[in-house]
Length: 304
Image (cartoon, rainbow, N blue to C red; front, top):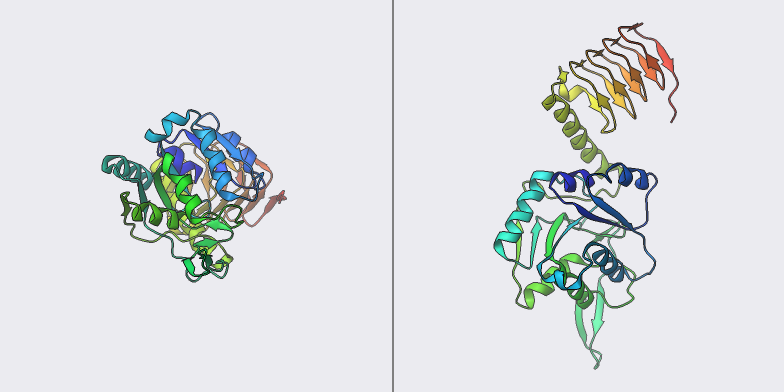
């Protein structure tokens, strides 16, 4: 998600929520490309938390009338940079209060919260808010919204002190019913949140495909892209050839002109210039320049 935002030329980012293991390192690794701030919850009021994140991003309150926020869900990493660039351009050109990139369908989520019912002074039902939540987070794909309008709209649909996540789509509906323009940009496939192993697998497959395609674009010869898996953390040199059945994981670094595969498994490996690793496992070990690793051998031991 951070990579997509950075590639869309976003340069001020607030990561809202409890830090995940390794999150600080990931943020630090991108610190030279943007101001990225971790906003950790200090209150049970999630709307106050979002307000605090906006304060970090927009220091001058008077600028909020002309400032636009791009809201991204950490559990929807399928969104791509080109989609975000188009979304931002459409939103600003239209002058709308908010623009949404499709919608996440969470009706089948077992983690969805119960509806929130409000009552009038006379005891009658005032409203029934269907919360679009999954895994305790707001369910949305990508939304551009005017900064000055977001928190007031969230406050109107999320009663003060309610501990569930703010209902972003309900806030957009609130803006629309009060006369603001809210538009939706369609997406071929709806963004769906990762909330279980079954929903994670297809997303991971798509992200792996993108990583492989990005290396092909940079000149790496990958004979059968559908049969190769490369982690985003892997580094590959110039003129490298990767054959079918190969898996490159962790902090693996492959030197210029190396040949990997078929059926090679590299984990946190260092592969020298011009080396050949075929039908072998190299885990946490080094292969020297121009060395040929014996097929069906195992070198080293993975660190995880």
